[in-house]
Length: 107
Length: 111
Image 1 (cartoon, chains in turn yellow, green):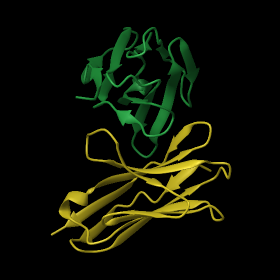
Image 2 (spheres, each protein chain N blue to C red):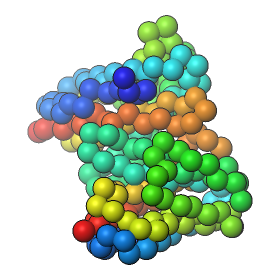
Image 3 (spheres, each protein chain N blue to C red):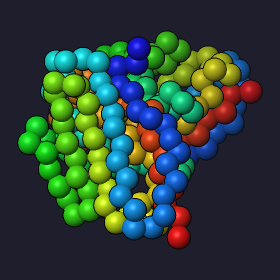
């Protein structure tokens, strides 16, 4: 079993839709959690950290469920520019990346 | 401008020909690392460095070497590249081991 698992997608949604991704992790001692965004053929960039209490940044909401060992990312009112691959990252003693979930937002 | 730079951006080489991919950051970050990214496997860490002269193996270190003689530079060395090292490589840096800033990537093809 991979340490960090994501549904690879692709998720194809129309503009304005709400879409959610989950990411499960196997190490219960994991301490920090992040979502990164990666555009095609570009480097990953930090989207947002994930806090235990959940956090929101504009149209994006991230949540952590320690009991079930997963993190989630919710995108509301999706835009064409949200099309990208979303990587979840889990830190214990090292950084573990999920393989990414690909999102395509269509007109 | 704060950034991580990598060179070269693209490289096609042949099996066994030693190569070095340079990585440099101008943010005075302590932590630097190298990843490879392959379809379906995501980013896998090759080596990392917590500070000058301190390097450690990541998940997939075989066939790679690194050095950290200066804080800003963290080159990746392939002494004898093989086709299974064909991949997209990213260098990254951060103040501590959390929010990482990635370089633009180096696409390597080993024939």
